[in-house]
Length: 245
Image (cartoon, one colour):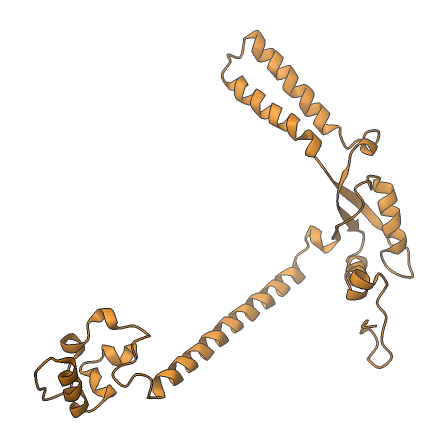
C-alpha cells in the first residue's frame, strides 16, 4: 500500500476517475476532477500508514495478500537467522573448551549439606548408573546472609577511611578492623568452620570427563527423575536409547 501511495498519481490504483469524482462529491469538496488525484492533492502524508487501505477499504484482496506474504517472509528470515545463530554456537562450542563442559550446577540440596567430601562421594556413586564416576571438585554455594552485616561494616569503614589522613591513629585502627573482618570472612569455608555455616542449596560438581557430566545430566534431568523420582528406562516398543519409560 505504501509503495502505491508513493508513486505519482498512484491513487488511480484504488479506483477509476468516476470513483474519485463521486468520492469528492460525498466529501463535499465541491469540485469535479478530470483525472486521478495525486497524494498531495487528496491525502495528506500523515495518513500514509498500514491502516489506510484506500477508498476501497478492505474489499480488495491485494492488500491483505501483500501483508500476509510479507509476514511469512519476515518470519522465515527471523527463523533462518535464529537457526544460523544456533549452528554457529554449536560449531564454536565444538572447537573450544570451557568450564561448563565438565561442571554441572546442582540445585535444591539440603541447606545442611556442607561437607564437600560427602557430596563428592554421593556423585561418585550415583551420578551415572553402573559405574563409579571420577569427581574432581565440589564447590558449595554458601549462604552469606549472616555475613551481610560485616560486609556492610567494611564498606562503612572504607568510606570513613577516605576521610582520614593516612598518619592518624584512627586511620590505623580502622585499617586493623577492616583486616580483621576480611580475615574472618576469608576463613568461613575452612574445614573446621564449614559445619557452622548453612549452604544455599546450590553446588557445582566438576567431573573428570565430559561424557560423565552429560550422562549425569541426562539421568537426573529427565522427566522421570524430576517428577517421578526414578531413573528413566528404554521402552520396548521404541529404539534403544529412547529413555521414555
